[in-house]
Image (cartoon, rainbow, N blue to C red; front, side):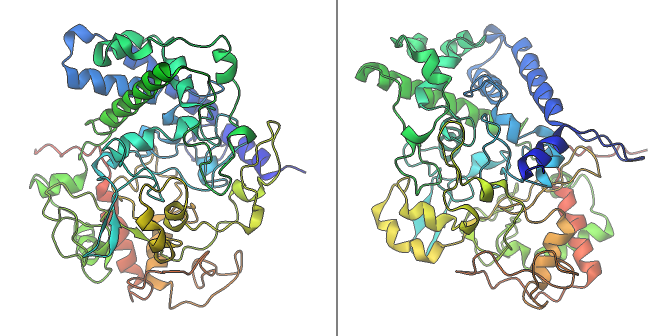
Length: 491
């Protein structure tokens, strides 16, 4: 009998043979595309002809597409954040099964869907607004990349995957620096940040340390979803450790610069052209937009910039709206039993247990972060019960960006939904349709499974009384948020 992981990997390497269905990218295709993107970026590397900002952005791109900066040399940032899907997961087989993507140790999966890296650079440093009584900013679904240490939430987000056991898997932050010193773009890095970046006396066993996936030695904070956030496994002098930390920060700053570039966050959708007055929305798209900021209440959290939402903490008048209010929310999404995470309750061959709770695990989102070792402010601990089960409201820019119309994306933090129509239908009918078990007849159409965790559930949505046509109109509008739109030439 095949395990869920075996089925997911088989599907990730299988080419669709269905007549009339576009061939979807396999796992090998994605890896090959990553290598091509890195190769093209290397070909564009000429520091003498570039100003500083473009040097930093190019450096960030090189790092973003470099799979050698992982414990087994097989996983780049881009592995979970591909351009053709709006910088989120690019393998349909994983989107429809495990939702989370395999780490550098291919048998390890996390509990959440990869967020889009596009527009993440606009997230402010996480802070609590006492007047609004809410948190704003940070990155990741649980906001744990706060930005408090560096002043840059996106850079701090970039620092987590290399040392996350279920992602790039290094046992020490210094390993990313050790590996990068041998990469072909080292001189560009030194041109940007200085020759001291790699002036480190590495121990004789550095290579062995960096080829050993993080495991039980780094699992001291087992209740944290990211137990080895600040490991120090490699033996370095205090001076060399400080230098390594500084270089690691610079790696992250470069990635953040790339994610903020026009290549990743270009504001080039049809909606942006509509705001600029160079194109009109279709009648259906306009109806959807009107519903979005009216009857459907989407603009309450996914701010469109017109100031009509109930929570306008962020710059609502921005002519380039981000379609998020930067707050956390619990929409009552059902549990996704397909997550491989639930079956990862046994030690792997390195002795590491990804999820000791097994099938009993409940994702408590921001609430877990606020009480965990990654929270930077002790005063926030008492707020944790109010944020149990809440996750950050994502941008819906590029929510429909896909390589071809038949490509399946996953939506929500646990990837429960596989289409925008299902998402809108859930927002519309969550509280008006009866409850049913997962897999029951009519599930997601005439009935809904119970929320994974009903604590602090958002009551703004759930009984919107939209018609089927109105649901379709909203989906049509959201499709206008896909980047890469070209204004049609006038005849």
